[in-house]
Image 1 (tube, rainbow, N blue to C red):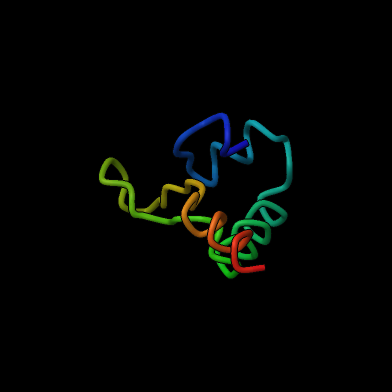
Image 2 (cartoon, one colour):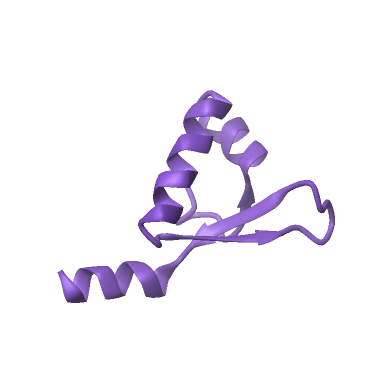
Length: 65
């Protein structure tokens, strides 16, 4: 999902994937733990975070593995 879209909120991911919010939240946390996801605050709505792929993190993981 994040490969085709540059930046999404958790709510947008839930809406586009039809997955439960809890499942999306769990997946986002796992991706952050693996340094594959970047999280930043939304300037439009400070209550939400914006998520995007950490391309540098995923590349370094592949290279060092």
